[in-house]
Each structure stands twice: as C-alpha cells, then as structure tokens.
Length: 321
Length: 316
Image (tube, rainbow over all chains, first blue to last red; front, side, top):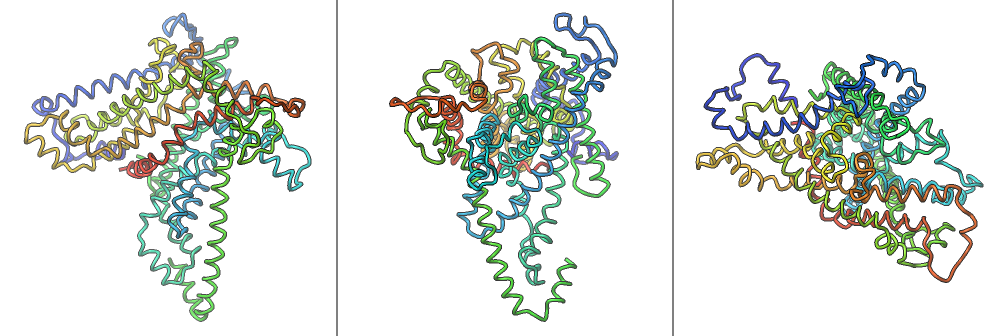
C-alpha cells in the first residue's frame, strides 16, 4: 500500500520503474489483458454499488429504477437525523465498536504476553491451539453457545446460585445494561486467541539481546514485560489499531443481530441492522433511507481511517499510507 | 532503559536478597499465570463440550438442566432428527459443501492470478491497479446498493451469488502479493531466457513456491463459505433450494428460543421410557454437526494459518 502512494508522491523518476513503451506493452500484453478483466470485475462488484449512492437522493422505487425514480435531494438524510431510532442506533454502534476495539486489543496483547512467559512448550502450544478454535466457529454457533450459557438453566446462573450470589436465575439476555458487556465478552471469547497470533509473532521477533541486557541491568520478569516486550510490540499495536479503526463500525452486525431481542433492542440495534430493516421489512421498504444510512457509515469509517492515519503520521508512528 | 539502570543502582546493595526475592516472585508469577491460562482454556472449551454432552442426551431429561460434560441419558435420536429428518438441513448441507468447494477453488485462482500480476515488478500498471483494489477495501457501496445491483444482474435467487461477487478479496490479494514479491527475480528472469511466457511462469514457478500461502488463503476462504448465512438470508430468502447450513441452523435455533421463551417448567418433569427429543437437544446436535467438519480438520490445518497471518504481515 505504501508503495503505491509513495511512488506517486516522489517527483523524480524511479529507476526501478519500467518506462512505458509500445514494445514493453506488447511484451506484457497478457498481463495487461488479465488486468483489464480484473478492472471490469472490480468496477461491476465494487464500484457500481457506489453509483447506487444516487438512490439516497431519490425516492427509489425498484420498478422505476435509478433513472425513473423521483429526486428528493437531501430529504432522506434530514429524515435520518431526525429519526430517534437512528440516533440511538449510531450511539449503539459507536459504543459497542469502541468497547470491542479497546478490549480486544488490550486482552489480546495481555494474552500474548502471558503466553509468551510460559516455559513449557507443550503447555504453551496446547493453550494456543485451544485459544483460536472459536475463531473458526460461525457467529450463529457462538451466539447459540452464549445463549445457552446465560439462560436460566445455563452454567453462569448455575454457578452464581451454587455460590449463593443470587437466589433466582438472572435474565442476562433480557437486561439492557448487560447487553454491551455480553457482546464485548462474546467477541473476546471468539477472537482473543486469533488476535494474539500476530502479537505473539511480533514478540518472537524482538531482539533477544534486549532481554539479556535488561536481565543484566537487574530487570525482573514484570519489568522485562513492561520495558522490553511492550515497547517492542508498539509498531504492531499501532498498525493493527489503525487497520481496525476503519472496521469499528463494521464490528456491529452479526452478533448483535443474532443475540438481540425485543427486550434489549434499544441498546442492541446497530446501523447495519437499521439498514437491513429498511431492506427486508416488506411493509416499510425504503431502499433510499437504507442507502443514506449506509453512506453515513462508509463516510464515517473513511474519516476514522484518514484521521487516525494522519495522527499516526504526525506522531511518527507506523501508518497505513 | 534509563529506568532500569536507575533501578540497578538503587538495588546494588542487596544483591543476594534480591535474587531470592526474584525467585519467589518468579514462582508466584508462574503459578498465577498457569492458573489463568488453564482457566482461559476451560472457558473456551467448556461451552463446546457442554453442547456436545447435551447433544447426546435425552430431550426431556436435558431440559431439567445440570448436564455438564457427560450425558445423563444417552441417545442418538437428536442426530437422527437433525441429519435425516429435516429437508432444510439436508439441502443446506449440500449447498454449503458445493459453495465451499467451488467458492474456494475459484476464489483461490482469482486471487492468485491478480496477486501474480501485481507482484510483477515490470508490470506497467502495477501501482494503478493496486490502488484500484486497495480502494475497494475501504469504500463500500453498502448493503442496499449491492442488493439492488445483484437483483439487476440476476444474481439473487441463484447459487452463484455465493461464488461470483466475493471471488476477489483485496485483503487476500495483499497477503499473497507480499508473499510472491519475496520470490527471487532471478527465477523469473531465468525462465524468461528459456522462453517461458508469463502464464508459464505463474503456473510452473510461482504457484509451486506459493503452496503455503495458497493453503492459508484457501483455509480462510473455505471457513468463510462454511460459516456464511447472511448472504443466504439477504439474497435467497425465498429460495429454500439455495439455503445454507448455517442459515438452517439459525432458523432452527430461532424457532427453539421462541418456543422455550419462558422456559417451560411443566414439560421438564415428565420422564418417559422412550428417549425423547426436545428443541434444546436438537439444537445442540445441529450445532455440533455444523461445527464437526471444522473441528475434524482443525489439527491438520492449524499449521497453515499461523504462517499465513504472519507472512501477510499487514504491510510490506
């Protein structure tokens, strides 16, 4: 990625770059031909949907098409930002996205560091193998598991009652104040081991001599974790945070859609679920509103990436482009 | 580092007691760390094992709760119900296997070829094409424009909506391209001197060397196909012949949670001589049956994804 843009920025001719000649074009015609196929494919499946953004400024009716539907200007956006449900949905998406980003990063790093401290190879390998198993399960299965653990006869209620913390089964899934923590925990359960893989790889690439000199300086285990491992992970942490910034708003769909229910919909519904409702609910079908909400989401995501990338650049940290 | 040397100076005096203190600290840390990691493993594994136990248990008995790692009353009826008695699941399984096989092969080929082009140093439109695909990672048209487009293209109500639109993924291409860029140029140059064209180089030189990264990407894509349900719901809702396994599982779980909404207390006490099935045990069996292939292949595949994640390395 960096390559792509930096070659554009530098004005002087890159010596490695092949000069554009008809002869060269002829020589690599097959590459160009294949590239054309990929461009056509990309235009159809990735760029044409962007043209569909036009629908947000219309009162889109499927039968009339984009050319035949009536134009309404910014009316759909005005409606969106006056819709209390949409405002709530924005809050939920941001809140769960942020919780997820913070906790999944912190817990994955902590898990990687702790696992790295294990001396016994067999134990380490077993724990790691177990840890990323849930990543391969679908959200449907994960939600079934979370649901089972939290129902009135589930293991959580059983344990809480056994230790007399509560007398009656507690309806976790029906309580609004519990929904966000449950969502955050479900993400942690599914992805911690997986997210830790990249941090573990980064830890192994830290120069061992740093640990040795830290030991000579009298650093204990915690100090080595704090002053050698963590700083060594910094570039990896920064780059992953940057990448995940753009996904903050994407982290709010399958789980919330599957786990949510009527009792908690005030806190469970996210932007994507809101969009889906306008797309699927036969009685209030409104493609235009859904498109407008989708535009909002994409624009915010892009802004997140650009701003955090800019900040990283200013601070001299790793950046995406 | 400066903190550390300050520490050293201040602690110079009590070297012996410090060593002793560190040894105990070490031991305590190891114990706490091990306990923590074992707990972590239990929290990860327990729910899966619990579902497994329930799936082999008698239906009415399971509703009473209290089943942990071992079934109380054994039965295979839940699996019989899930695997043989439900058309939806049978069709879903067929479609899911088909899309996993076809989708993985086509996607791997499509991603590999694009990565190959992008990793050719002499390719004239390298930076342009690469930017074209990077943009697709961030700018997305969104759910509804995509849905409308697929309807215009007659991809909805069809099997191909699972295969064609997601065939090329910019992220996977970036991973593969990074790997391919690491192959020495001299190999390509030598082959070109011997008269090999680009397609020959792709097939006979690059592909054999890229087996590890191909395996990784194939694994990612296959798992994605096996686990997907949302496209079945969005594009093929009214076409039960194109349903997927996970979507059927979802429907099953949904109908179950609706029917046991208030946890029926009465039914739980009836005991019967014949093994029974209840929604609780059927859904457990369906859950296990759906994850079984992944778990079965897991030990063989796991060496690939670790290498895959790290070679991709996010950035060149």
